[in-house]
Image 1 (cartoon, protein in one colour):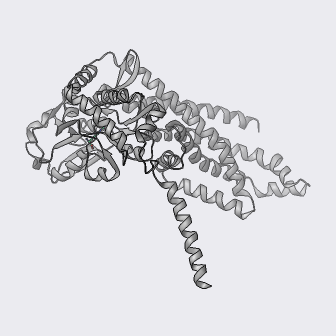
Image 2 (cartoon, helix red, strand yellow):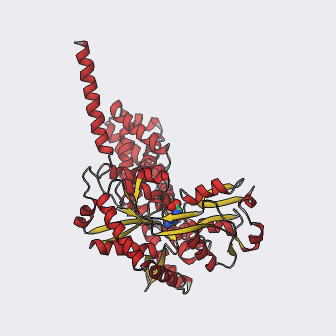
Image 3 (cartoon, helix red, strand yellow):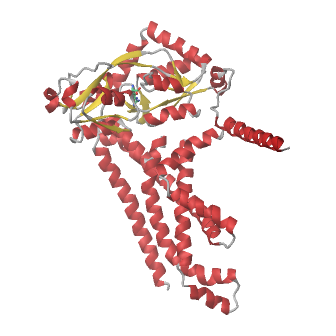
Length: 485
Ligand code: ARG
């Protein structure tokens, strides 16, 4: 009898385990129809981080912002060979593997090198290139750095979660490594003396140096500096891999890569006036930022009010979830929440776009703060007010509507306004998943223009104009309300 109940429990546990596990399994099944799936969909989704000229970068072509580079040409060739349309999804380099594993993208073509750690997570195609790793330094310092030992006690930079980061740690003995998400930020750090060298893929190093007189490539040679570049695909996607390898073979056999590289180089040097070239990037980014913040605040206010009401009830099982939700959201970074929404929705089987994920994350986040604002506003009204209302014979809801709320609103509105200002600023974090809002576009312009600092100034001014005019407007509204007292 006793034994049986243990067995039953085990069976239940086993069932729950299998059930949960099936949820968290990557999308691909045991039989491989990876190629067929893409062909049925009619679309190949390629993920990359377009901060890597001449591999992948932004360029204005006939007044339109486009992602170009020889990786993009390779992607186009693969899509053409498959007979499908190519869609590029841009995100930061360190988000790419997660996006591939959760099925947000079909493959990564982003100058990625096969490494033993990565090979545990994904499969790689045949390599399409072999390149040397270089260290870019300030031109005035070039003679200081002859061997890898010369970086002892110095600071060097590398892109986050790249082979360059590993190389810097392993071979530039005695140096401290700063890892950043975007290559232009590394260059900015180098130019402003925050770091003394940046480890980059050879062709990328040459691209940046050719665009900037104050930079040079040092003579340093790495022991393990030779790296291959390949395309990453989900584990077990054998049919897809076969197809990709045959495209790579044609690219090699017909010497197409040279052509692609030449095109990329020509595009890199195409230049015109900064504002005519990049003005539209800032406009687009600003519009996205406003949309994100507005949606975030509106949905946050609705959801937040509901949470506040729940928290103010006397029923424990209503209050309890609301309290924990608010505590959890306020106690974890927005960045983490954004990734949770973006990748989490995918694991649950719903494909939510980066923009929608951003809106959801901002709303969920803002709701917690709004709930606290409303709760504080309501409990900030003197207790005596409620008691007086009740003693006049009002019901609880009447006293809430006619006595408490009108007074609470006066505390709540200004704080809500501040929340709006906060959300505008915080929305910049959403750039990590590739929403083309202002901060993201800044990175794009930094990379495309090879000017790391000017875009930042412009962006800070735009954010300031947005938040300052908003708080002015709110100030006026607040004064109006006060006069109506
Ligand atoms: N080859 C390096 C790696 O695999 C860096 C690639 C970075 N690519 C980029 N598009 N930013 O880690």
